[in-house]
Length: 143
Image 1 (cartoon, rainbow, N blue to C red):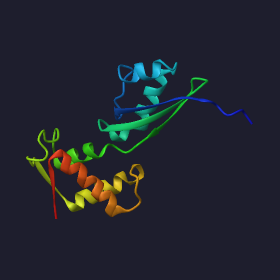
Image 2: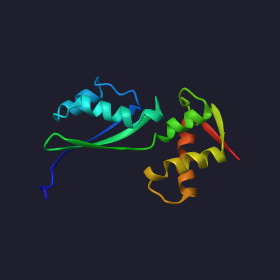
Image 3: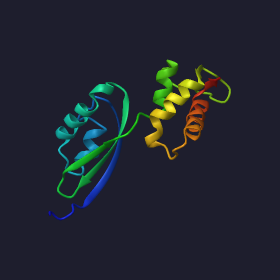
Image 4: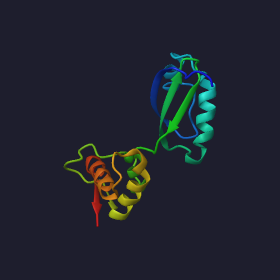
């Protein structure tokens, strides 16, 4: 059995699915640890091709032998809310201005999608987390 590899660094990035390039932020973040950037970009793009263009958080574990592994996370809640509400961006004045509305069923759908990345196993609690994100973006939840 080979000896366990030593973890040198953990890098967290948010990249567009299927469209990552060696340009910043990927190049500088991985280059300083001696990782083969082209290999990471091709593996990431292949793994995220079905989610083309959606922002995907990725956690990259870099080992002492310059090899790496990465874990794909669910898209951020704000990205999912903007997609459902048809928005380009959230409100600049979230406490005073409502720029869109989404239904409780849509919030539940987003919460179920985000469950693996949230710190709860309860759907109601996950929905409350998503509702808080909606509130901070100026999106009203109806229903």
